[in-house]
Amino acid sequence: MANTAEFRTCPDTGLLFHKPAETLMKLNAVAGIVFLALGGVLGLLMGLTRWPTVHLLQADSFYMLLTAHGLSVLIFWIIFFEIAVLYFTSSTLLRSRLATPRWAWLGFALMVVGSITTMVSIFQGRSSVMMTSYVPMSAEPHFYLGLILFAVGALIGCFVFLGTLVIARAERTYGEGSIPLVTFGALTACIIAIFTIASGAIILIPTFLWKIGYINHIDPLMYRILWWGMGHSSQQINVSAHIAVWYAVMGVVFGARPLSEKVSRSAFLLYILFLQLASAHHLLVDPGIGTEWKIFNTSYAMYLAVLASMIHGLTVPGAMEAAQRKRGFNKGLFEWLRKAPWGNPSFAGVFLSILIFGFLGGISGVVMGTEQINLIIHNTLYVPGHFHATVVGGTTLAFMALTYWLVPVLFRREIIFPSLSKFQPYLFGIGMAGFCLFMMGAGTLGVPRRHWDISFSGAIFGHQFPETAYLLLGLTGISVILAVIGGGLFILQIVGSVFFGKRRGETRGPVPLIAEPVAPGLHGIGIGGISVPGTLVLALVFLTAFILYYFVNWKYLSQVWGLG
Image (cartoon, rainbow, N blue to C red; front, side, top):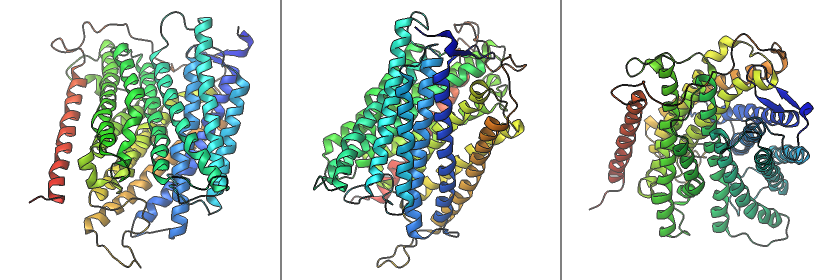
């Protein structure tokens, strides 16, 4: 049983924090923010190099820093923060003690040592293998060792999360019934994380042994298949985690309840079953893989994963609309949206996250996952345009939104420069949206990804891209600057608030940090018997954009690859 002296009750929210878990949440979040800051600076250098007019870095520096950028933001920032989310959604939301805090500390220590080891190997200049690190290209042994240590630490964090769920269930800390939906979403992320880490271990451990001479050969095809079981699935953890954050923020800001918990939980289950299979789109042109495997993963599994995202894309705004209408904003189609707290960075961040993830990341993901039209943009700049829309526009914005709320709740500090926080999500979101759109545009024109110089200066065979491609790369560079300024403001505010923000003390503040829950049910709201008509209209706009863009790509394919 838990010792009550080990708990703290937040006076503003009533949430119960187990102190060992609280400390680990803070440390994991801080470590994540450090890598976000590093990755943001490196991203700026990448953007200014891909901007032909600036072309900042030399080739060797570009590939070294591109490797560091990818691992900083796609792996270290995200997973450190996700471990904090796992501890929050288990220990705090379930009012439970954290399972085995010493093991959680060991996991955190391994993640820190592993991430630093890998980054040191990259900055030493002999591990510029980019994130995929395809063999027979090889990095230094401590590059792989660092990743393995980090993965083991993250795996320990996952099992601590699962152990906490078991304790909470055994001690009935959250009453009877199922765990809350937000915790269920985090459980989905945890299960995908275990699959991801297992895939990484299966391929990275032999690669490490190969590098130090204990294994003679690593099969490149097997490496690619298993690596993508880790590489893309690590991003699927993000999807589950940031959607759990969407539900959490909607509850915090509006007191919203899910339209249907069963439907939302079913959508999370679809992620477990199919989301990681959709990573096959990275291997659609791989000659070593059979057609049946490609078709199953992209033409069947992918659409079920997309269905899950579309369900969440309907139910999260729907929950918000229902809560707003119950609070009296029930006129017309969009009063509930016009009267939303647009100056609240938690709401603004999540709303932009939903838009960018859905319209840019989601639609482009379907295009990339369709075997035929994937050929138009495979391995072009379109690919990073897509995953920046999902991981940065979707996940990072959602995590930023949650952080604005966590600083006063977890760190008991006021946000400094609150007027900045009102527009920071828009600056970052607009910058990232432009960045993603312009990169996808350049990719559609054939501009390759991961290439230092699209003019191919000094190459035996040259290629001249259309002038529009150069224009789009210039606009990409400008968008990067906007996004980095937005990201820099976020770092400034969060770090400044943690160290210099006004202390909130242990008494309830004048401004509520969590909205009162709305009453259950959908009776008496909406138009013509439809409870959430505004959300349905927005969903139809999304579907129209989805269908138009999808078939425009088929039309484009017919022109690129003419028959007869």
